[in-house]
Image: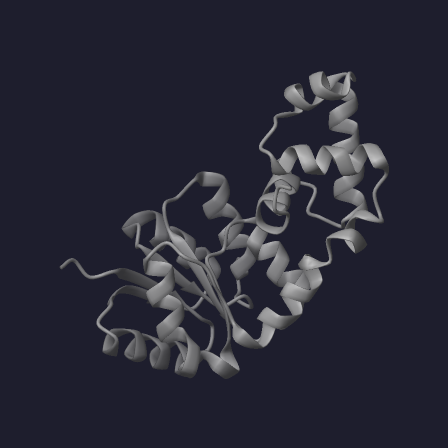
Length: 210
C-alpha cells in the first residue's frame, strides 16, 4: 500500500525534528521538512504531498498565509495545523480556507495520530479541547441569525440549499446585484473574511439545511 506523503513545517527545530520522527514512526513518509512559510509553500508545490503539517507562527509566510495560497492555487494538499493558538477566530479563518486538521501543540502527542488517520481518509479533525467551544459557538443557530434581517436570513437558508445568487434573486424577486449586496452585509455582520466564497464556505460548514 502506498504510504501517505507528508511535509512538515515548524520554526522550532526541536519541534520540527520531534514531529518528523513521530510521524515517521506512525508509518507515514515524510517527504520534506522546513522552518519557514515561503519554503513550505515552494516545497508543497514541488512535491505535492498528501498532507502538509504546518505551524501558524512562521517567518516569511505564516501558516494561514500558506493555507490561503494553497486554497487560491487549488493545490491538492490537505493542511493540518499543529499550533499553540487557541483562539476560535483563528480556527474559523483556517476553516474558511479548507484546513483539514487543527491540533494544539500541548495535545499533539495524544491527538496527532488520530488526526492524520482521519485526514488521510478525507475527514476533518479538530483538537478535542476546542471542539466543545466550537460546537457551542456554531450550533446556536437562532443566536447567529438574530444579527441578520429577515431577507438576510432567507438568503442564508437558500445558500445552505446550494442556491446561486442568480437563483436566490429569482426566488426572492430581487436583482442579483441586490443579493450580492445582502451577501456583503451578512459577511460584515458575521465578521467573516471578505473573500468571494467566505459566506458559502461558512454556511456549508455551519448551517444544516432545514
